[in-house]
Amino acid sequence: MSAAAVSSVPALFAQQVEQQGDRLAIRFKEYGVWHRVSWRQYGEAVRKVAAALLAFGLRPQENVAVLAENRPEWLYCHIGIQMARGVTVGIYPTSAPEQIKYLLQHSEARLVFVENAEQLDKILAVAGGTQLERVVVWDAKGLWGFADERVSFFDAFLKPGLALAASRPQAVEQALGAIKPEDTAMIIYTSGTTGPPKGAMLSHRSILWVTEAFLSINTVNADDEVVSYLPFAHIYENLISVFGAQRTGYVVNFVESLDTLFENLREVSPTYFASVPRIWEKLASVVELRMADSTWLKRHLYRTAVAIGRRHARARLADEPIGAGLAVAYWVAQWAVLAPLKRRLGFDRTRIAVCGAAPASPELFEYYHALGIPLIEGYGQTESTGVISVNRVERPRVGTVGQAIPGMEVRIADDGEILTRGPHVFKGYFKDPELTAQTIDPEGWLHTGDVGAWDGDYLRILDRKKDIIITAGGKNITPAYIENKLKFSPYIQDAVVIGERRKYLIALILIDEDNVIKFAQDHRVPFTTFQDLTQNPEIVRLIDDEVNKVNKTLSQVESIKKVALLPRRFYAEEGDVTPTMKVKRRSLESRYADQIKALYAD
Image (cartoon, rainbow, N blue to C red; front, side, top):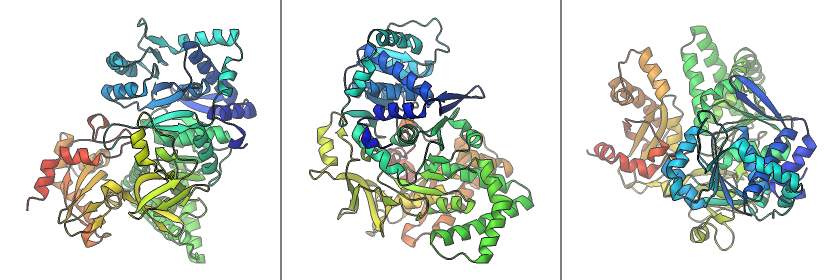
């Protein structure tokens, strides 16, 4: 099936529904039981939403907001909005009321779908300052007897649509047929590491083009399975769990919650798994620490197997000959340790594993390749409809984000910035033509804001252009490279390297709470609070040791001279990180200005 045969995202979905029929489309777990949704049922649910929106009076290209965790209703409403000629605006479920108010005001949404009472409370707290006319709640639990003329429960909202479908059977088909390829399918509000979020408009044409081009590189099919847990307010999860499934017909499995992700991974054993560096790093640290706690024999077997796996991975990735001795040793390591470990993690069926949405250290990829998990890195951003380049599973190059997607133009500007041009470039920022003109130049080049370099025809990302550090000695430092090495430590969750116009680099460190607490308990380190833990001399020494390990892999000018352990966790609601957990560097530098000053005091 070619995306060129259809003109819109919901038209591609309708085509897939017709082809797949009663094949499995969605699984979701509720109260410990997995439930199944066929493509036919999926299609019926989407059409009910589309009809209800038309009955509500949704206007062509009008924005409709969705505020919820991942669940099937998100997809029903997402595609239903587009089928009714509307535009989906996803809101991160962790957003604070004031953040939600800004997005509702800016998007001018008259209707919002929300998951439950918790999200409804946030909406009602700010609805007075918005254009909202209707709030539709999926889960009525805890809301029995609740009454508000602005609020409808999902089943009640669908009823006028059923009446519309009975009186005007072709209403949904007519709306679907009226969608133009250049129409906006969704607005994704960027994370906003600097300033308020910006609404990037993605057209049906760009989504269809990117989906087909992206999936033609590392091919998947209707027999594949993915796991959905990243927010649908982000382009990454849309690319995997929405557009990819519509393009190929594979199965989407919804986890119960982020807390049960690793358990659900074991149950599903996906063939195609895409995630962000934080999850891959966390999983690696969990394995390392559990092995450190196991018996001497198990620990020795694991260390030996991983060491053999690393040697094998290095040779294979460098396209060097693998000697008979190494080949036999690797086969034994796989049989005895690595294959059982992959089954325990839920990756025994995984053919494609992708790490994206943020930079990650080369050591992370080497580790997973040592285990036999084909982890590859890709690169893209919202404004490029999610992807610009990706490694091929059969010939990845660790330390790069792969080769450009065929049909996209990618070049490096004189100042090192990555520029790209092609059908994947977004329409522009909603209600902000000035910023759009700054981002897409007159020749159609999208200015990504990232600094990169070519390694043959493979693209290497250095850092965000605005984050490059120039030291007092005039040396250019890419902090992301150092930060990613630090985050590979099981005891470090996040790191912010600082040194602009300074004589040396320092780092603000956020400890990995679970792993450091376990270390403290194992070594009888007394503590009461998170802040108390970060101030304990033994924990400070632990982190210093981890930083020194990283320093040994860095040049003198890149090494970290001093560190400060941050006394509190990062919170998106308080401006420490974005909803996708990207650090807001400037905000943290301002918040911890006194600590930074103290580190440079001498």
